[in-house]
Length: 422
Image (cartoon, rainbow, N blue to C red; front, side, top):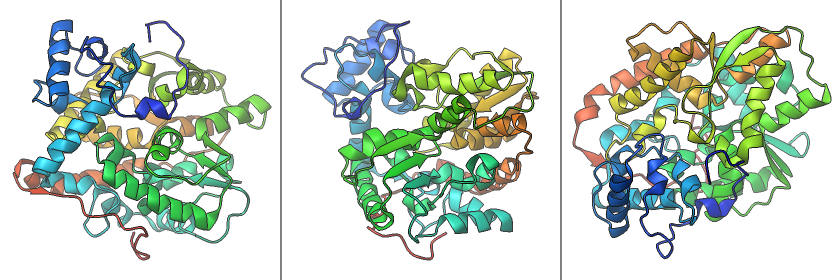
């Protein structure tokens, strides 16, 4: 991809294995990386080291697996896949630092940050996610999949916008996105098997996904890892929401007259420029003026959680906090009224990190859905402050483990979750 060239959607091959036979270690992929941003000669050396299976100076410890490098590889070698491969090899040799255990969603046999927050939810929130756990036959032919992050912020979709959707899901039916982005190939295959079993019980024809990451995983990743359930369509909530604006189903009652800057999802670039235009088009439609941060669209920086994905980082809280603080710096510098996200995971990350951001940050952090609610005359049920406080408290309880040298290995993911988990 050349700068300025229109970005088209990718397919499953974009996430295929690294092409050793095509790569000449030109280094171009890493010179465009929004995180490591290496000079050309250093980029060449890093790629040679990684190809030879040797330690790297920065790449294997600092990569956030955002896949931007894949876009800039003219030979389509999939350099990001080599990072994931080397991470997996390192994990097989060394295991993961014990601090990472708290971030593993699919394993209810030990606590994690999501289970900690769920156990401390309000009765209203717990009633919502209890409804979503229902495994009775679907009302129609579409399963609306919340994903782990929306399950942690269930009031986000308690709106007239979503009232006709049949939302189903639970933390144990996580799509496995973070396992994929950290290189755990075998575990992703087990996730696919579990999801196959679930889909074959509910038998949906269509899948509507309430996050961009999940949309990409179901379209482009899991079919490479054993998900053989065939949907007639897999649609992101952004496409669905914009189509409702386009058809006139959504009536804008209040022009918001706000200046907004946007945190792009790591996966939005996988669906091309037209997709990345959608949140911007929606914001303009509801009366917002969009001011871009320096890292945006295909060159966006992950909200910060990706800084914990390498085996060396193993979800080190202060490394993730540093990455998130950089994004907050960029948002603050725009002078916008609102910092808008369209991923619930980004919303949680920024709200939690703000507690350790030692600078004034007066911008409101709002999800795109909340801004749309304001524009149609609704009052958002904002529980993110409470959720982030609970999550932050759980993270602080883990601080003694940040420096522990103990390691662990992920347990097997059974084909079916425990019936009483979460």
